[in-house]
Image (cartoon, rainbow, N blue to C red; front, side):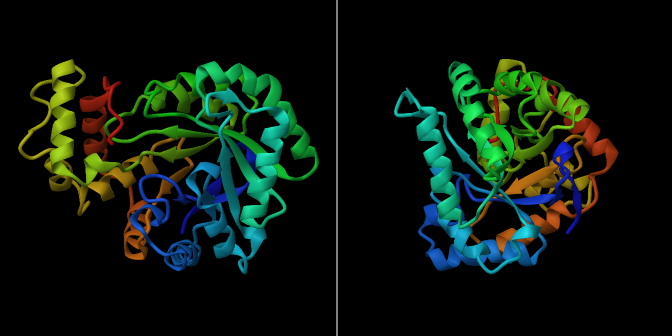
Amino acid sequence: MEYRTFGRTGLRVSVAGLGAGGPSRLGVRAGSSERDSIEVVQRALELGINYIDTAEAYGTEEIVGKAIRDFDRDSLVISTKKGANNKGEPVSAEGYVAGVEASLKRLGVEMIDVFHFHGPTMEEYRHMMDELVPALQNMQKEGKIRHLAVSERFAKDLEHDLLKKAVEDDVFDVVMVGFNMLNQTARGAVLEATQENGIATECMFAVRRAFSNPARLREILVDLRRSGEIDTDAVDLFEPLDWVLEESDAKTLPEAAYRFCRHEPGLDVILTGTGNVRHLEENVASLLRPPLPAEVTSRLNRIFCRVRSANGS
């Protein structure tokens, strides 16, 4: 495993992070047993992953807690999240603190290293900053939270308006940002500013359905041609992005997609989520491979530089 300093937090983190959410949720959504899900987390630890991201909404905090119980806590960076809104109503400061306490209990830890506001909207942002941030800052003083963070709602905020505001306010040490080969808007919208300010980043959406399902990739590319976000002759719809594999040593498109994100300046941890140990091992191996050839990366950047409407799902 390779490690890097996580922005101004000073933490040392694995470049591959285990995501306990996403389409898989450690296999929970596919009906995996708790034991199988725990084995995925523990195999991640064996592979050298020390960054684990979960959330109240994922329903996987207890699984993570059980998996890390006998592991060296000081070597781990545990990240979790809670939304600022519940059933259409803003969560009170007291309710939010109670939610953090519940996460601590489910995880079986005394301190959460990185605590995110989970996908707030711009409408929720003011309440979050005025009422909830001060409450969490008090929890920092109590030693229950180490660093404050915020994750974006990338599927509905494809141009990162929330994160642009959050980075500008400079309260959060960590942000979770959507970025992949198809949608690179975060490069200019977020990553330049996070690097300037030492704000750490977690990358989500590095690999989504488009990179493992040629039919879905084709649908997305057709839409992008119609909208004028990519040039009509930029891609072959019958062999979508096959040239990436032909002009590099990547064996699969998901591998190429992971490598594209892993070596993007400003992205610190690339999250990978799965409920399958073999799949996890493949993803980690991809993230530890060298960058794609510069010509391939440059061509991908040119093709998709105008994309604003797709996230790869």
